[in-house]
Image (cartoon, rainbow, N blue to C red; front, side, top):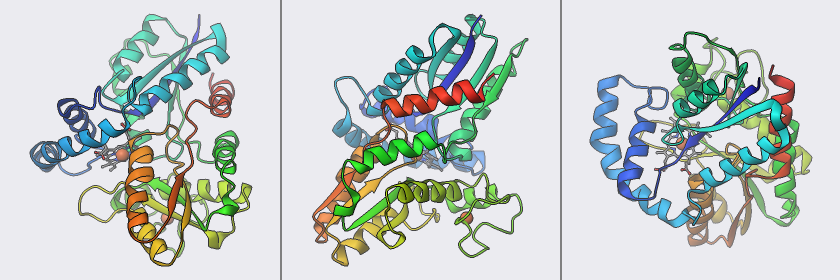
Length: 339
Ligand SMILES: C=CC1=C(C)c2cc3[nH]c(cc4nc(cc5[nH]c(cc1n2)c(C)c5CCC(=O)O)C(CCC(=O)O)=C4C)c(C)c3C=C
Ligand SMILES: [Fe+2]
Ligand SMILES: [Fe+2]
């Protein structure tokens, strides 16, 4: 009998065609943990405005990054999963799923059940915990097993923002570019609406109330996405000897008009270009695989904005993708934190 492992990434459209992108956006943005407003307003906003209008625009962006093997997020996640299977051997049954679209969590859980695994270890592939990413994966898995007659031992990884091998993976990739040769370094994380941060603060007295609330991890902010992003950036910067004044942490990918976590990457990129920064190195350590948000938003869109304002070049540091050190990190998580 084998132990089960379920790796879950965010998800990506089945193809870069508008109909598939719309179906993906619809499933993603109708998740109440992502757009956390009342159900009627969410349906009106998402089905009536965002999906119809954003669908064709996003499809155009996906066409720019699509490869012969498929969407980069999918390609890298599949490769890392295959490498992990090799490492873990016969003692484990490993499945990979996407929170939205395919392969679905339901299909992966069905396979684990059919394989009669003795336990299931769920690893959402997001280094920093957010209700909209990790929390949503946890909820979906719990919904599925709640319908099973027999529920095996299940464990959920909450976050791995300070995992040494994960940090070292980003450090190795960044070191290839010799950060000292760049004028400035950005750590650009996927953003979230500010209200998600406030909801994560169980004390209601810390987040955005205490000065520099994200600078250290405390009891109040231990599950705060922003505080965990700050910790990840600090650890990478320390290992690469990047002094504090030479790097900035920013948040990208804002959607809608509500305030999101700040500072916004787009605004910092523009300010730095205007200040005369010419060469900038950008890490995106919220993503374990390169995807639309890194390959297109950072390396193409922000790069163009930077150059239009006098900057010379934005260099994206590759994500962990299917690097051996990332597979080492996953293997260690499975062997040390599982059953
Ligand atoms: C790092 C984890 C992620 C969190 C947290 C997250 C929250 C979040 N995202 C949106 C809206 C969009 N995100 C989109 C793409 C996207 N998001 C993540 C990760 C997180 N999102 C990834 C890995 C990707 C790329 C997927 C790929 O196929 O490459 C998109 C779709 C693209 C676009 O149209 O721009 C949207 C929309 C919200 C609203 C949100 C939390 C509230
Ligand atoms: Fe996102
Ligand atoms: Fe904070």
